[in-house]
Image (cartoon, rainbow, N blue to C red; front, side, top):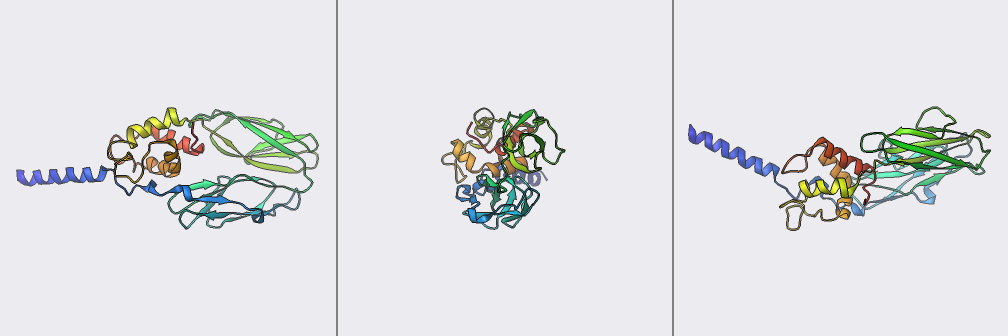
Length: 270
């Protein structure tokens, strides 16, 4: 009986080692740098007037691995690269490939011919999961009388919106003179720092002996911010669901949140 129990114990220990060992089949091992998305001029159709939502955008993708999924201004992903029923405004297309790699296009503007109102927006950092951001809108052109809103809220005359969480915000300015509106996507960042917040997590839990270091089992190393940025979206997924790190001490919820906040900020080199 003792010999039998000893064998069971040994098998369990071996299984645990194999399960937790760093391996080359990490979900984030795909080369995300090849994925690219853009919206050519031929893929843009402006709305016909201020009241119309007959504009459209069609994205073009190269690299990565099919099938692709597409998102407009941070909305739900879809399999079709075309987005229709759009009003005037600023739009960004994000593409996600079969390896969960993500990248976004530069901002694309749909505009009504003859409409002159425009705006810029400034933001302050929200903090990670704290909602302390401030968004200030400055409009120009048109009649000079404007109303503002963030998201689908009601229009108001106040151009400052506080208590903003991090993420893409749909901001709309209405020219009260001719009722034309312009909508743009504005990014509120958390301000999470790679050097202060993310690098210590990578060095203590990921870039460790036998794993994401030179000579480790993984097919890439985390020895620079550029290497981490290439796989930022996948790192967010596998750390959030607990499948990484494969060995060592599991990440705390606060560490997972910091990684998610940094990735959602666009994985900056800060």
